Length: 111
Image (cartoon, rainbow, N blue to C red; front, side):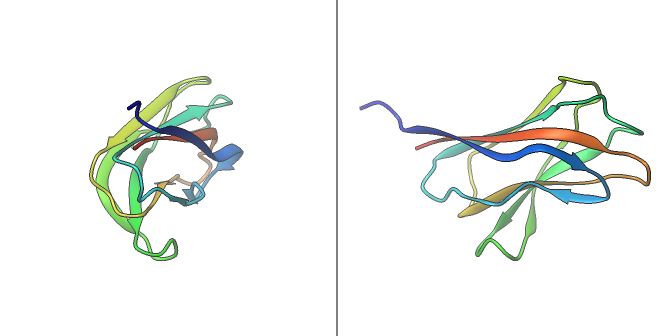
């Protein structure tokens, strides 16, 4: 039997600044997940660190522990892999004043 795969676009052409996060995605059926974050424009200001958040209900969020640097140039791509998570997933980041990044965030899931 072939594994079931699914790709979800959870942020498209969004300018992230200040406190930012992707749309939450219900992924409890998946065995593994990979988030890809692509900078669609040249980022402004210092590069920041993004992190994965998990939630039991899609409303209250906790840091899962995985962190990764945001892309530092146009068309740069960052990623995070997950194998143990609950039902809801998202990517979040904090940008310093004046810093921003226009992103495309996709979540790739495998059953």
